[in-house]
Length: 265
Picture 1 (tube, rainbow, N blue to C red):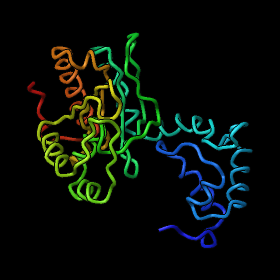
Picture 2: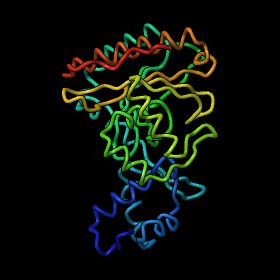
Picture 3: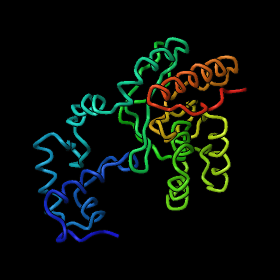
Picture 4: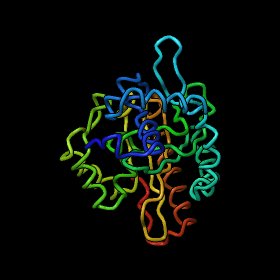
């Protein structure tokens, strides 16, 4: 339910405005955003102008529409430094890159989304990418499904029950009844796979990083072009290197129970 603007202070209004800029709606006009938030156009215009003056949003000179500014890139190094998994994961990510020559990325759950908090790009000319800060829902792609599968059962069930599952491609699983057994299989085998669920032509492999309680900290993942993903020998090697590194990183983060099994395919 939308909260009326007169119940919010100026900081809360500014935060609501900034949080409206999401991957599914990255650009807003003043009146459209005002209607979406149930704010007055004058209030939205005033706050956006202040945000623009400080680099938090940019405005297209022709359309007069707004998008997020470049100031957020200044926060990436700070966020990475403050996150213990990022510091610990880097040498393992470098090992995976060396062994597979594919793009490696590290992801966490933030709210109800997957967000990429670190990456190392493949040195190959034909490569898949995963930009820092990239977000996606938790039901599409190997990284997202890995995070969801190794979340607490309560979190996963609440997510599947309450979240609107919208297809990102024609390969996206949109039926919670079909997604539940896949999540169970991911948890059993210790890794997730996907091809074209989020972006056509992109394959992905992902394994969990667990803490001392066996709870999910992050998912370490590989992004591959479809042509190399379909190379069974290469995919098997990628899975082996990925799962080995994820187990070692989990142990470094305090995980000491039986590790998820290595891939069998």
